[in-house]
Image (cartoon, rainbow, N blue to C red; front, side, top):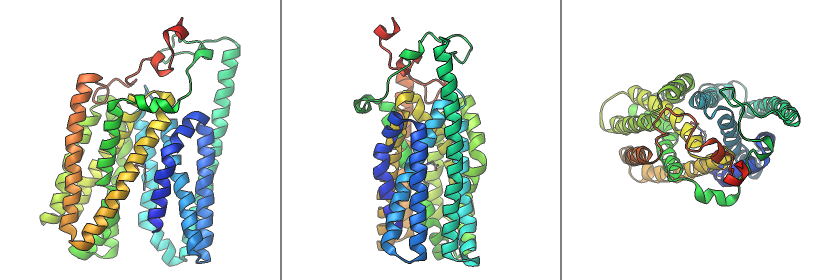
Length: 397
Ligand SMILES: NCCCC[C@H](N)C(=O)NCC(=O)O
């Protein structure tokens, strides 16, 4: 129930959060959504200490609103600062830090709770969210300083300088318009395909992680510690290797090809786990490698197929599709496990991975025929500099 409240509020709020971030800015997004995280966790921790179930759920709901949008805001900031540069490396670093949190949680939370109390452990998590607030404040100050310098340049009538050092032909006052809600209708086919691939791939990972510990204990004779260590390998690999994969992807492109290979390996790994005597350690290693490869490639596809002014909205739509689909798969996995057993659960994961393989193959063909940016090495994306800024021929004149 607690997870459902979190994922439902997360899903609902990300449908609108990215649009608000594009309209009102990253500083607004960072401060607002980090505040939601801190307030939600504080309510949750106080309610845990007082064993008040209603307020526990309210706290989880507020936390869900904050966390989903905070991730979108982080990725939008990365897109704005790294599009045309080392985008996949930057996404890889963000994923690496996110997974550091998951790994700490996986390996230490229950020990901390056992050594102290559950209440202490949840307050410790809350304290860490206030610590992250400090980083949002630092980000706000850095952003203000950058805006001040940009204003000074503008008042001195200095044209913005492009990456190669040549003055940009675009005058600052004409530099782009904000997103409008109707712009979503003009999102390209490639964007929607990337969104669906993300949902399909992640549906083979997060719901699997949620049940893997139980499976290994109930069906493979692992102790609780062994089972959670084995499951944690998936996130451990991603924590260490996502930045390296990102660096490689920035160099070679091939984002869709890598996703296709990763989805195929994931499909085989799910079959191996339940239908062959292969050790679960091998399976989690394969799934961890696939997850690392896909997470570093697929998120960096999004900014390449939308304009920068709409990237928050685009990322939040992908997150909404992803989280909505994952919630459905979590429910289906729960029912299938209850009614039949783990082999059938594994077939659910295999079917989703197969659908991901098919859709990624289709997207490779679409990309090849239409724009060649998702599998290519061009880092600037589909839109030209003026299209990015939404300038018309009149503006340019
Ligand atoms: N429990 C983690 C939720 C993270 C959701 C987020 N939308 C996401 O998928 N981020 C990328 C990742 O690989 O974690």
